[in-house]
Image (cartoon, rainbow over all chains, first blue to last red; front, side, top):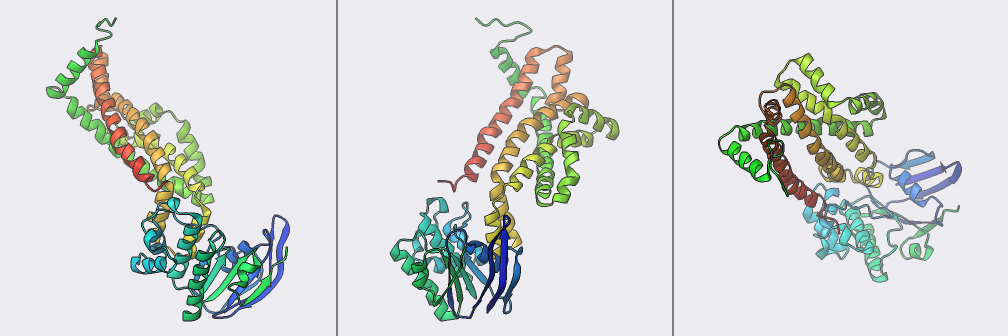
Length: 191
Length: 224
């Protein structure tokens, strides 16, 4: 589904990473572990097509639909939780509502992001990414700041989509035990 | 102690003139003419200025091309713009509207350009990844993000536009508060000058208190 070969990124005159290579198969959950500043977020931006300034090869099979949970939730502050999710699915509020329900936020649809805790906002962001039924889900420290129960619930929702639809997941974190709870394989990203 | 003289009429005398001009004189018709000009010039300047400002922030080439013109208009006195428009286009309504619009335009351009430059890149990336429609990009992302800048341009614009409208009316129109102030200036009728000026200030204050305050609340309803 995804092949990355000899990927290199320079930032501010230094190599953020170089000679990075890995593959991601359909239905696979791949973890990428690395300390802060190792380029995890930059790597996800490259894979998502948001950063085209790199060397090497990023090859997707076909044009898979990508969903992403960013490190910060990136919700529109002037739209409610439900509206934020619905915007990703062309205004389909039924779909958005179902996605919120899955992440345990059925009652928070009418709430604006400023009134959500960070953990709740992250779950709204996860609902938004899952609502589009992506072929590939990119998770950037997605379960940080969730309480253990909510984090387990969120992982469960993601794994359910992996099992049901063969969705591939690439999850990055500085917290290796966090990755081990979900990923079938972990690649280390050294500084 | 307040002493009423022909040069400084008492507040009661000014209010009496205001009432009399509204009931029996041309005040309401002049007020309507001026407000219509303010409305047209303000709308034109906001629409064109927003488009140019956002365009300048979005395209460096467009920005470089427009920047000298914006600088020129910013430093050009409104009086000079009005006189030139009247000379080149004749003493008509088109010249008056164009003069006021051109005087307000650079102010809107600069405010919206700075607003568009400070837009959140993270949200733009998110919208790109989730393939927001063009309509959503405009109504759900750009408009709310730029709302504080639209409000700033509206507030500063309103106070600027009505003053320039009075100026162009004084210079070359035969209706409106500016025209009437010019007439009473020639007659040295200070009570009427104050009454007409007061009437317009009251209307602008009313717009400020009702419409702009409502827009302020509406634009910030999502904040904690």
